[in-house]
Length: 351
Image (tube, one colour):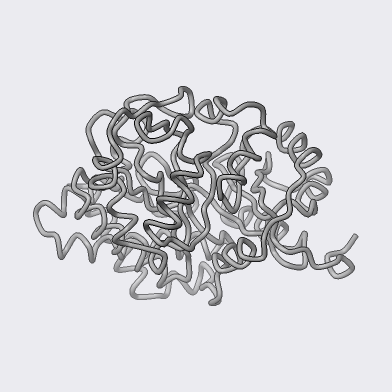
């Protein structure tokens, strides 16, 4: 079936992945499912820029209303594409180290980093990256570590605001993660179920502060943590109506997209099977749930999930799609700001 003969499907509440460097017929069929609203890419989906560009074009053409294509491309150890011209980006902690010496300069450098990150992705057809990490560096988290800008909520907020300016200059939306904060627990929610025993007041005063300061205008999307905050709610934040509805939506007046973290992670298993996890996350107020690295679970969920996404959620998701044309790779190389910003990245890495 050609895309021109399809009915226009609005974005659905499930983000899935693809296994290789080209779409299979089975994957095309999965992406046409009305519950699907986006695709997340990984390193396995990248061979070179031309291949990535073709893959993104193929994904966008599957449906008349293109699916949102996202990736975890933060810099440092979490950067999915590193070859064939992609700039090696610093870990965000290196921007934090610069902030301790010169806060104003660090925020400007963060903006240049964000521009390079977003401009290169958009030149290949990727719509957004799940960045910035807003977790504070408490010095205990295995999985966060140097992905965090800094220990200070103020520093994190200033640097994140700079990075977001750079993303926006290239036409890319941001996603703050992992609400209300993953940096205060040692366990990695990919493999364990982390528990944070701090009080609500402690978490709001420290870890969640950047979300309040940045707000919906700078953070059009947010991803909650698969962390249980035991003195607040027995459910991980991404499945908790208390955290999502009462704190994020009401207390912080947040009106952007709320993504679940990957429902196949160990931190999500406390809720039940894949259907129970999706139902819990969507029922708590997430707009879109992620199912990564398990196409069998994605198909199981799509076959069994009975959920009607709201018009409000659809509108929020649509707002994440770029609205300005991207520079292609050749035009990007001729862009003076890009070349300047790209040169800064190697200087940061050499410090």
